[in-house]
Image (tube, one colour):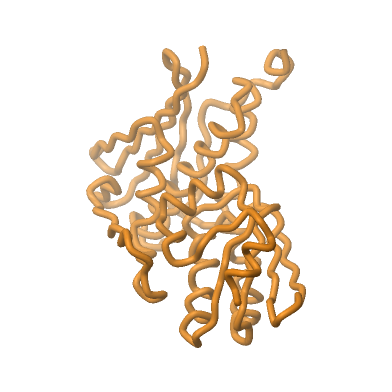
Length: 148
Length: 111
């Protein structure tokens, strides 16, 4: 089984609040995917939700301020992988944002909403999302179903 | 993230994207996408080799497409993979930019 020879991935990764640091997430998430022999669709969903969550924290939670920490942890639960993203930003609940709804009819070019796409994608591609305010930061928990 | 362009028959400009259209990928192609969109009237955005698409990548597609359409031009999205297409449909972008998997149909939609 390919997963048996994959190196154990680190359970926790801390990055600084720079969009460039998002590049560190990809190999870390890939190592987790290899360890669990995840199908391509699940890998894609994890990469997507991590990028959207971290991008929101850096751009909105920390308001572009560099040098602030964002910590991601993962754990395997029954039939799922659980990713927890924590920061030290002011209260910011991405789940409280109501993404603009695209119109069902073909839209004029300037009416396609770009705001809130990240949260819309996270709601679609994660198995579940949960937000918790910490004493000095925010915690977002995302789960992804996996084959046992 | 690689980007290449090609002029096809009937005034169609084909932009081919290759790689991950994540935040870094979007930043790598934004300028060239907008330069190309500045003059194209019939734009085919080939997504066949795009392996990842996030919300910043969506912006890299939508903003140049808006520029083309604002001048009365047309834009189609060509051959996205299954997961990339799911992102496009979840975002609603396909309501503005039709998705085609057949090249002949994509080119016909630009006429």
